[in-house]
Image 1 (tube, rainbow over the protein chains, first blue to last red):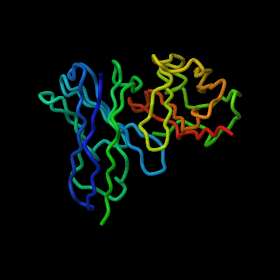
Image 2: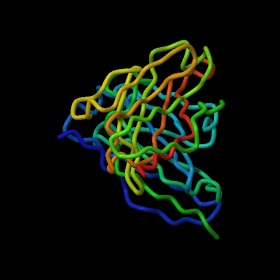
Image 3: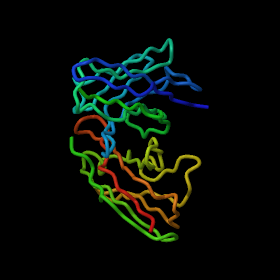
Image 4: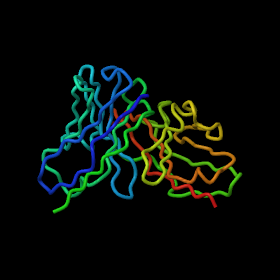
Length: 120
Length: 111
């Protein structure tokens, strides 16, 4: 079964760093793009960016470029989303998701989500 | 980049049909056949319902259909059922930023 399993909920303070993860299983991890989607409390979905673990080719939405870093470790089939200095406005649910082929295809496989809460 | 425009809410009675619109520009919805629709129940991850304007993934009911005319895409749900009550989001590739943009979401209420 193809699955994306995300790391658990996080509670952090403003200014702290954070790296959340998304582990793929049931398929060739290096052959598919993995993207990240933000959903702020009570709000809609926002496409953040996407990475191809095979060669680490990474694309960002202009809204998130420079705000987060997307990476992957193909040796452990895991993609990451990281912040160097969190803000209260980063409080949101973050989903990883996989398109079937091209980087801008629809996401047909989704992780369960990681809730990030940033509060002093 | 601007989100695609969806109505905030729609409603219908069981058995009826409803349509949710998703309006963009020639740089996204109107220019490419990469429009998708997702269903999201409260507290759950989104689920893909339609991809490439009108294609249904395996396992999605044929009560769900998608179409596009100009810069507006549409999701139609026929034979409404109680379990269809959820939030629905459209998305599209956008050449203006070489990324993907989502709509603001539409809350479907089954009366």
